[in-house]
Image (tube, rainbow, N blue to C red):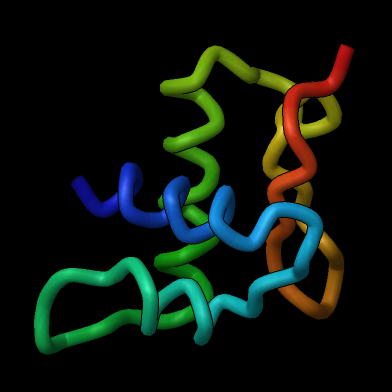
Length: 75
């Protein structure tokens, strides 16, 4: 469920870079929140579940120093 909410948040803001904090605010369930590392590992698991072993092939792009962006499927 957390990964799905994170994917939905990214897709709703397709093309925009969302910081780890923004993703936590929009897609985290629970009072403990989490940190940037937790977001990083959730995105990694999400990519794998979607079938993307290589980050370069994934529609979820890591933007170094800023966050993550959904850019749609890469063909």
